[in-house]
Image 1 (cartoon, helix red, strand yellow):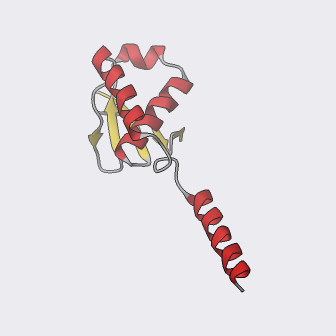
Image 2 (tube, helix red, strand yellow):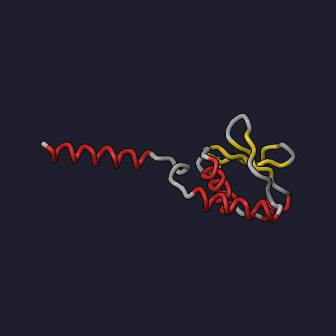
Image 3 (tube, helix red, strand yellow):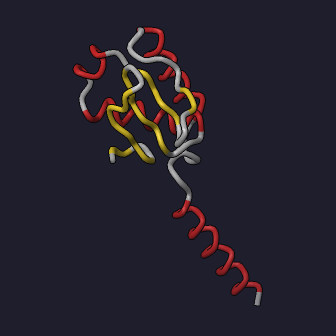
Length: 105
């Protein structure tokens, strides 16, 4: 009987591990440090709360020079450090692109 209970517990644990969002399965101190480095360069501002998720104000220079991978990495870092799944890049309060769970929408 204890073997069946153990097997069920393992199945439940595996199921929960599969359902964990990327925002909760990340290294918050590392993500916060990476964001701080980009903010220090002046390319982006600290994320601010908006109606749905958080917004990151970026410079024109950053937006035109960053490739899709860099944008996804920063969105994933913001998502991780704050614990939100929706991150939008903005410039002059206009939304440039929105990411959900670190992926472009």
